Image (cartoon, rainbow, N blue to C red):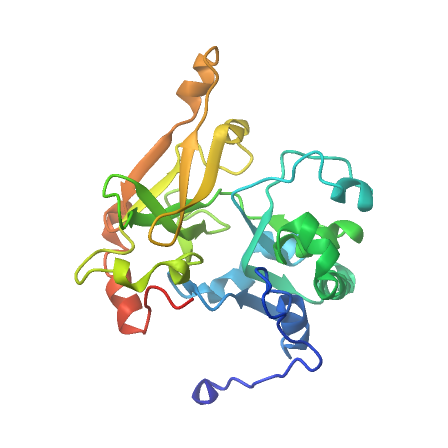
Length: 296
């Protein structure tokens, strides 16, 4: 890392909590400690599918408060106390945040973005309370922006699950990657995959990976996956155990909701074939760079 000009910063006074499941309360402090005003934060298991430097020049980033968050699989329940704690009207149109990637300008919103990071850091330091509302660090960033009434840009395309067949059930899909998309359309009007966040791959049993077996094989997504699409409320994701942790996706439609059945369904695609096969070498490159299954 030193050869790339990186410097190491120690977060004095902060440490992991032994035995805790959600142990990710260092992110806001890490972004604050960075000497850069503009930061693209990435989890260590998150791989950009192309050079993401152009994001800092995207108009939607510059004109929307200098902060971009990407969606998670779920929404805040109307009964979540956070609506009352922060005095915000319940809005079921908003997705929770997936904090494996965060794009932020600390000077954005006339300096409020830096203040929001400090609010998020406070929430994360008091994680015994805030993580009960947020399911980890991820939504403390969004809650901090809410608390300061600071605008941000929400990535416009809902994420997809990327994975392969389960280890013990060849017919069952196991998603272990959150496939996040670009914040601006390409020349063909598409939001292309941008981040391969392999958040569950570390939870796979290492014996599951047979020699020559594909890892990043199948994309499972909603057919109408623009994030503000109302019929996405019919999409349901869940985590299950099968040779490690897996996520799967389905669309639930009421028996009298024929229009919903037509508007929304689950699509399965092959990762190495979509978008003209541009991602066909990603898995080989990931393995050559040291990527592996398991580890936890």
